[in-house]
Length: 308
Image (cartoon, rainbow, N blue to C red; front, side, top):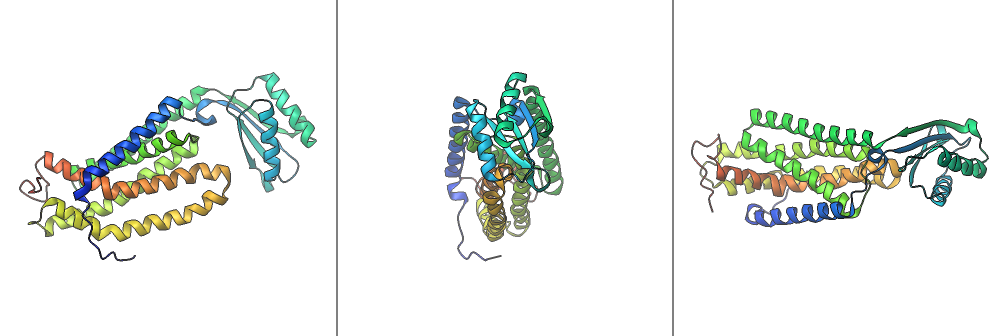
């Protein structure tokens, strides 16, 4: 871990961090709501067809399949599957009726010299499945947040726990705003990435808050904002190196891993950046604000002298 010699005054500009974060969230969510979020087949419902192509499926083959579907006005995700990539899984956003499925399969059979025996699976599912996934995703985030709040409250204090959960909520909203602004596909890998980011972000925040807790015992005569600045600077090198190292390992997967892997790694990269930023610029200032509005910290017997 590298050592950063310069001491930064993060708390001095906390209002700027709040404004920038709120602006990003409002702008991204606003664009997403006006234009509509780009929900994938996992949430909208559709048709899934798995075919044995009888050979190793190349990127060119996938492109040709995509063109056949687009010719019929069908939007779909196509991924390679099976042993040695001899299979493809076609997942359409629209639910195809019997006639539409026969039209699509007929075009594929003619193009690639296949027949009915090549069809391994055909499944239809409606938007109710997507609604269930959305509800379960929200429940998972809420349950994990409550569990983390209980742990941090027991381990540290409730003010640190509340600030941590608000910072995690910030990270999730930033990620959703990013997807809304750029109309990126929201699907199951996105949900998995969100849950991963929640855990990653909270651990990064806890590292800083653990140092805050220690310094609250050592720096009793310091103003709270000075103490927080000192704590962030002490852990800054660790936070940046951990995040940079993680992103450096994920970027090759995002570039070379194919479309399916990219659906998971891209929100992961965005979330790690947002999580690192919130741990440094959002969580600690929020803790400061909570202390100002309440009776200080349990580590100091008197109200913090950190008023403006």
